[in-house]
Image (tube, rainbow, N blue to C red; front, side, top):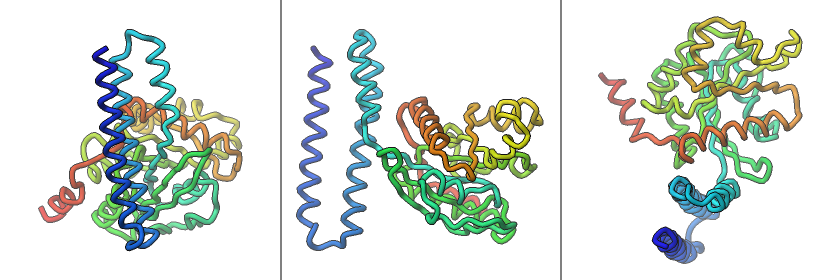
Length: 289
């Protein structure tokens, strides 16, 4: 009985808040630009959905005495139409731009070409609807790129947080099959330096050039089993979360499976996304120290 009253009070608070904010948005719709209005509405919807997801997570943990209520809450969480926010991180030439295009189902969103120099030198965001849900992807500059200093690259990469406000659900760390370098061994530490402690909970390794495995008649499990200890350690540091992509393969199955794995990671993180207290301020402190 008390739990029902508690749930009702939460519902009333959400609807009251929603009505208040929507009424204010309606008042200014004629005096702001359409893009600004769309950003405002998206920010409102995202914040409400994030709050509801957090609430549902807490309620489902307290509802263990009723299997029916647990099932209903789980279904509600699956049906919550919140989009995914993804940051692509990796060394120059690992296929970040091509991967962004594959995820979004488009070829023109991110400029991709074979080059030893980073094609992406500033963070760039693109959004599309994938299987009926909104997916936002930010392509970041190549790690350890010679055309930018490490501090410049970190500074620019940190901007992905604001582009994916209120925060990314996943950092996809891209590593090309057959090209695991000493620099990539330090990738997790690099991400932690840029985004702070706790960021590793949101990292998933995405192996690119999966067609190389097909050529060698291997699967990803065989590849990892035969890899050197440094790669195995990196995978372990990322919670043994990984996926493999073939950007030459246009079948949607690999994208669907990736998003399912990200959903599972989000669920393991309590339905949350990555947030950090002013990472740019921390970076400035490190830069000037």
